[in-house]
Image (tube, rainbow, N blue to C red; front, side, top):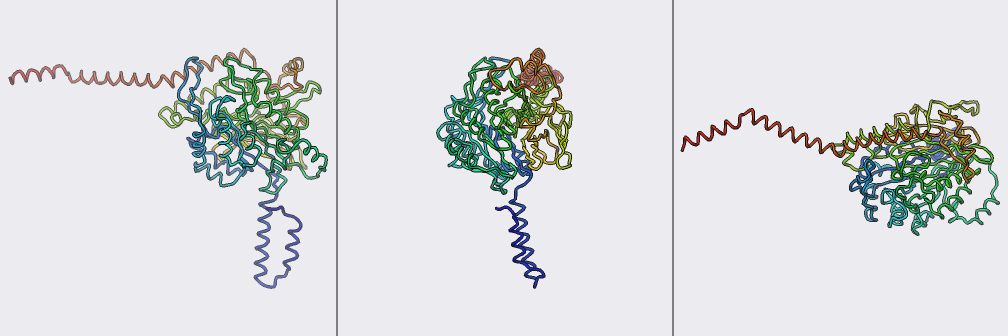
Length: 585
């Protein structure tokens, strides 16, 4: 495909002259113009670009989202973890009740390949693949092969290879080479949306961010030789990180492990270099686990807060001055959130936002029954299970403040572009989406839309209906995301957090806090107690309820037959039969 230019006008002017001498000339002219217009419309760069992402997709369940994703006309799709479920939960460990631990059967390479083949045979997914869009992926625990998996998993190399085979990653890519060497599945993909449609995805060498492809000497030589361009920068860099293959194991009973690491030394070095080299207008960092949340008292529920030094290192890399519009993408939790940290520089006292979008639950979610097992989705207890999972998580979102989660009261302001007013919804609530806390428990996928003319990024979380408003929708200017313009004031602004922050800096230059304030410790503990009690009642109902119901049913049936026997006066009937036999004798 090619871009249209003034040469196309010359072709028409020089080869076709009016008036036409005959019908053939007219027909030829019209047909040629049609082909030219069609070529231009399909190949020229667009002012709007989209990238989609989602996670937690079970190959065993109904997959209703692929047709909706296809209708959104994106340029790529990213699996944000758990593209399949390859490990088995074979039971529950009640030894620490009310806290439950699944008993898991890890995946083998044969099982991984079998389940990826099953996913590729899904009719809706096959139709989606027919579009030929680039598909990227990162590993999380269930497509890695073991629940809450880490570097001790013995098939981590085979796991990375199986996922790359599934998405059709080139055998010559650096992501593939590192995975083959057992280093993990990580890499960077760069789109230049100023290129003609179909040519936006740059090769690793053209992108120049990966030091395993372009050495430092060659990179600096390129940079020295490059000249400034008057054309708009429409580049988007997508960093695909592996938070499993090199992850430290969780330490039992330890809430925060200051020695724990997610990426490993070499991946850290690679990421820091790639981000420093980037000249993209938007930089998207994708990995499986939520980064911002402060929600759980133990590490049975995974997030980056449990390894605070590792999380701070990630923040420090993304908050450097050259990094334009960093956005975190995560999955894993079977629900979706818009989250934000406000990060302060200890020296300049400047503030930068760092946004995170979690999209999780393509086939199962807290609203629809969070388990990927069929018996909880379609069995006799499915309705009860769905109510239980929805009510537990809904109660949690009502009780806990979750100050990292955005809270919308509607429009947060507007910008004037070329005499036109564009409303902004920096805390969410755009396009008829929900107000209040920015979360959804329903099946969902995510969308990033880049408006290159207005330099505005819109984030959406969408569901099964292509005609309904998004569950969540927010937009920001590129300058806001890069820290050059103010973000909207949070809905629950507090001053004490900033005073406390500036007086208690860590060794890092940057300190990040939840943008809606600091959740009170007393209330946080109270909310945990209430949700634990409610969860215990739900567990007892789910696991013991069927036995109790069966017992009561058996008692009722026995009582019924006893009553029936009494009504027929069974003893007198038997006595009559006995007397009849005696007379016959």
